Image (cartoon, rainbow over all chains, first blue to last red; front, side, top):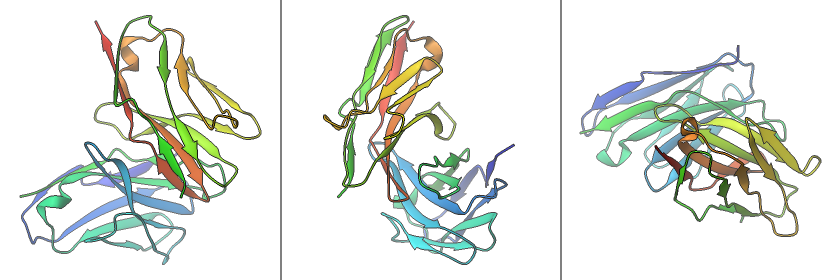
Length: 113
Length: 110
C-alpha cells in the first residue's frame, strides 16, 4: 500500500535548537516535497526533490535545509530554529509525471519556544 | 505567474444542503486541476482530478468540472453530510509544481 511516513509526529524545541524532520515513502516515487501549513496561508512549499541527491528550492526556503539521501528518504533540517518556524509540516511524494497528484503524510507538528 | 483563487474562506451548511465551492485559476499551461480534502488531524488527500482530456471529475458524491472559457473549477455536491466537514483545497498542477488555493473550510451544522 502506498504510504508516506513522517517522524516525529510532534516535536518541541527551543529557539536556536537543531531539528530534523524525517520522511520516508514506499511508493517508488521520484518526487518528494516538504510543505508547511499555517492558518491563513494554506500549504506553502519549502523544498522539493526529484531524486536522490537532488534538491530544489520552493517558495519559502529561508531557514530550512533539506537533503534527499535515497529515493525513499527526504529530510528537513532546521539548524537554528526560530519561533516563526512553529508550524505543521507535511511531506508528500509523487511520480513526478504530468498529472500525478502527490500523496501526503500525516504531518509533524513543530513548536519552537 | 500561475495562480489559484478560492474566495470563500468558510462555508456553513446544514445536512442535505447543496455545496458549491468556487475556484478560479490562471495559467499559460494546459492545466491539470485537483481538489484535495483535509480532515482534522490528517494530511491532505486527493478528492478528484480533472485534466483537459476529461473535463470532469467525480468522487464520493463530489463533482468538479473544468471550464476553460471561465477558467473555473468549482466543486459541487448535491447533499452534504456531517462527515464532509473538512477543509477543501483547489490545486493547479503547473509544470510539475502545485499551486494551492487558500482553502475553504466546510462546517456542517447539526
